[in-house]
Image (cartoon, rainbow, N blue to C red; front, side):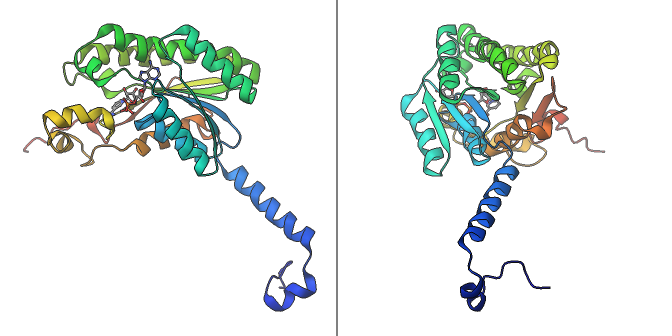
Length: 287
Ligand SMILES: NC(=O)c1ccc[n+]([C@@H]2O[C@H](COP(=O)([O-])OP(=O)(O)OC[C@H]3O[C@@H](n4cnc5c(N)ncnc54)[C@H](O)[C@@H]3O)[C@@H](O)[C@H]2O)c1
């Protein structure tokens, strides 16, 4: 059967129809658009200047989202925006402290001013590694737990107005099991898990899905101070992982993408443990 449009050399001159070609290209672009999982969705990712947040922002942009990058570090925030815009995506940077309710209001207002609505929020920001390692309770609770609450509560009215949305909280395996003596961090992350469930129950009626990811060890800059103290640390951690490797930011970005997209339309209040099997148990009895 002859193809509807034949673009072989001989046929081109005879049948060339600029409008038809344009329509084909256009419909192809529409197809691509439809296949993009977050096409034209508006997303905020906190702490997106580096690490997991940056990977999430890039992955969302790749799938068609317009992404607002929040971070305290201007240079890193601008670098994430450039990485997205250089690849043809759309992103803006806002320097807002998630622990500060005035800053959070400004972050939400700027996003709504720019794009009219907000479909997705990823609560990813975390205080410094020093604050985590030194059990700085104030910093861990203010950024990880209260920051998640401040951003979520500020975005809910916008999502209600827009008919729904998806909030993805980044907790940790430390919120599920005892690991190192980083009690303040672990307690804050346990709080994020409880907050996820509590808010999911409250906002199911608003079609706002609120889920949580608990990553295992992910190779990001947070590990640098620990690598300085012990250059072998990541190699020493690896055998604890049944999959035989630690995670990469893209492992979490792909899970966040799923939760943010309509593919997860029946998931809310759920805790997604993405940890290479760490919390499944790592004891091999010699039987
Ligand atoms: N890397 C891991 O091994 C690992 C494991 C489990 C969970 N997590 C969680 O994943 C998330 C990201 O981790 P990461 O390793 O990419 O961390 P990271 O430190 O590399 O990135 C965190 C970002 O948050 C920003 N930030 C800090 N305080 C902020 C504030 N008050 N407001 C806005 N931004 C702020 C920082 O500037 C930084 O860019 C965190 O919630 C972390 O607890 C990480």
